[in-house]
Length: 158
Length: 184
Image 1: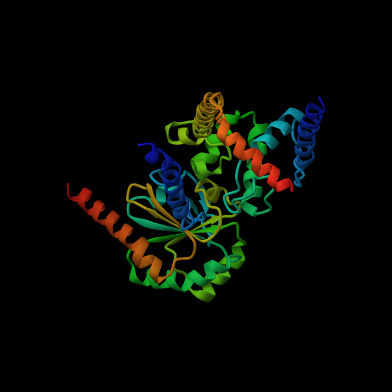
Image 2: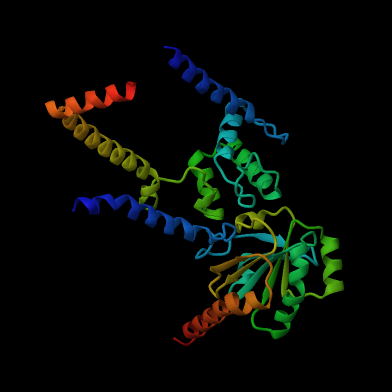
């Protein structure tokens, strides 16, 4: 029960942290709050082509600023998420997506971890089974061995 | 057989190690342009030297050419400029300049002072054409074939080595293609 509490509080702190982080510097007037939310979400998921470890919101490079504003205005024009993502990938390549598309080229990326997890579980299961079977045949000491052991123990006490 | 099974993790580890080791030598700045194989984006922009003259994407087709994205605020462009002059003198193909997010007067002054290697210069003041070309920093150089299809993009300053080893072979190949198509 206590463990559950700890896990819950950790999860909660993540939720709070991501919401605090979503404060862009530009003064862009969105038509509506839902547009703003959608635009920020999109820009968070797009990589800046110049400073490649930052997303469009984090980066202060001119290219990121342009692209960010482009995303904002496209959202306000009512373009769908797919349209905006296509706009970006057709110019800057698949690479700008932090979340790669699921296609034949990226199957290993998306499904690899699950395959590895399954493999790990399988190997674990095999090991556990083997050990359980092995545990039942516990070696018993013969009478002679027991005598020898007793003697050794007695000697060590003296 | 059982012993062989014990080697599987080692083999997997070695395979993974070799794969990741190769990754160390990849340059993440060298991005494949998403534009390769696509036509020059449509645009209608003013000429750098003359705001009344309009250049469109159609003005750039018909022959193999080089598009060079440059600006006066870009130090690497200044480094590259003398080599662009050399290329222009060799007269291999037209070099079209895209003056990217720049100040018109400053750009004209710079070309007067340092020489103008460009056959035509497009004034892309708000960076719209740059954005459509997937430009993420000047200088960038695009090789365009005679059908107006972008065939190669090089990001970074061009010098003699890069030109002769990477870019010129591509230009030559495209010019041969053009000749072949012209004959048939």
